[in-house]
Length: 203
Image (tube, rainbow, N blue to C red; front, side, top):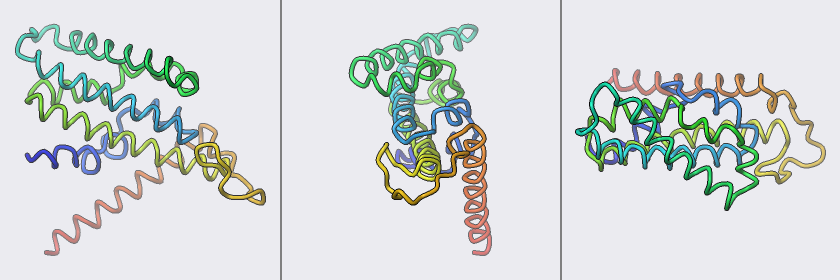
């Protein structure tokens, strides 16, 4: 598989949010604003890339019986670094995301890529897989966040963009709104995929 294809899989064909339905907890919980979605997505991307690289490097030396525990230790180390960096340089984002940054340790996306890809592939491909999956996750979070913040608050990144006359759909920034927006976007993704496959079959 070409390098660009490894990255594109995470963005579109195997998007962790819209296709694999992984990482639903942060997806539903932190997407009330674009800043939160972007912060969580980029944090997870950094952990994905770094942990994939290290796990690929040590894959031949880790006994099979303790591989999952070993992966979690590696992931936890990088999550701790990200948590400290956010607290030091982006305290507002760190406070807003709260417990969800430490919970990256047990995020299904991180563990799934460690087990399914990094433990079986080269360092270069594992890094690209982490980048693709991370960017796919970030794209999904930002898209969901933008819809919820714009229609639920009338703002983007905290700035009013729809004017004082706009009546926000407050439900969209409440928990039910997360499910509604996510469900609609998954439906659109499936519809587009179905159309693409139908055109391919016609040819």
